[in-house]
Length: 312
Length: 298
Image 1 (cartoon, one colour):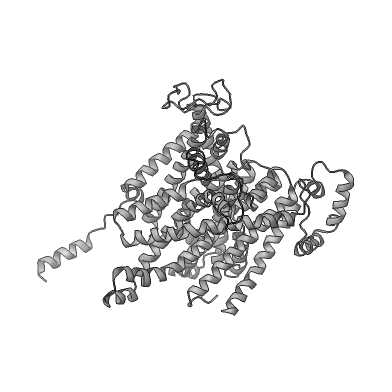
Image 2 (cartoon, each protein chain N blue to C red):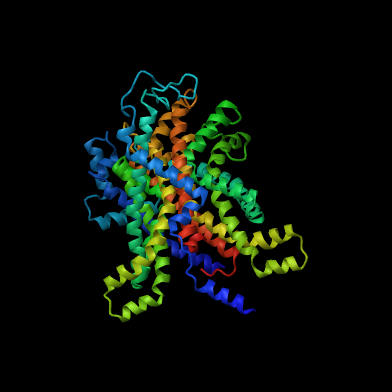
């Protein structure tokens, strides 16, 4: 088990390197002088010169890359042009809320998706199956911003059930829970469809296998057969799916956070880009990519834990 | 078994199988038929936008936030009402759909082509395989929306950077699927036969490999189309895609956000239209896959 985890970590190194290269590439690709971009449009020539010297922009590109790597590894991502705080402190303040949002989203949508998918598989071909599958196709076709807007329009404004702006506090406080409810419901809504579809086809696959027939032949109740022998084995592909969908989770969080003014990394990234705060945008994008890699790594390790046959 | 049944059995076996063309089988499914008609209608409206738009999509009028015709205060001058600047919604929808579809089609086409080429090459030249797959792994670690954010951060907001980002984001998935399809095709005997005949690599690649993989790859691309439209619309909604005054559906929905209380139609109609486009594309993609290549179903 330990070797598998170590192997998985080793595999991530080239990917991490690639992501850092891209983060660095962002700066090189910027049209115009990177020092001016980093310093912002209002900077004086002195400041620009200082930044140019700091970043070693007169050095060859590969030297610049290694000095960039060195700075990133030391946790130096520069300063925000707008707030003048360090990028790292801005990111640290936003990581918690984003992680909370993702947890709050997955905690209700994945079990619900699994339950719906299992129901659809059990009643295959029937009305329940068709309804659930129709809902899930519709669900994956809905723009996430539309779900958010409808949540605000109805739950937030018309019925005044829940707040729809900002964050109330940590997840374990009542206010925190009330504030995270609408963003988490909106973000989770796009997850139910894919999870339900994957669970359905995976349960159908497993129910055909010999051990399920044996379980039925032993005279176990149908519920027990499906839950203990069917669903349990069918969950493995569902875990992989969550890894594959991690991109949507990250992307969805960007949109959801922006619409609900939720102070996470996604909103930080969009705000920084729209206000041309380049260092902050670069840092936020880097952190989002790292988060995405981390989710995939956790999923792979979980996968190996769940399925002893997997040898990574 | 009697002689009579034996004879009929033989007749049945000898009779040519009634093979329907794929599109007939596709259109027999009522959901697929409906999706095809809706999608076709939307594409035609988008293509004919300059001809059928009742008003100039960029011209403001005094009738600001006028509701659609089915609401009490609505009228037929602006059948779907007007937006916050008094611009005709229907005309903007025609133009907006056009830009939304262009962003989707161009990025899926370019990204799909490059990705397939990479995947096919990886399967065709095993020496290239590890390099291509590592590249794909790194590309996969940048989800589409992040690529979009990154490119917009560098190039500034606009439809161009969004198209480039979505095209790049399509490459790795497509490369993976093309490679897995091509690997199984490469094991077929006709490839060996082609080699034995002394065909050049180029001929083997285009005539044998490419032609046998292309339909499966096209199906995969059609399944991706809906997702790409959604990501493009989301980027425009955030203000990172198409720039005003051009019309794009995601951006139109964003512009309606401030008027959600008084004039919900400004945000709702473009959002519903995106939903209908993506839904019909998804249904059509699923049906195409079932008809042409059930192996991809997993």
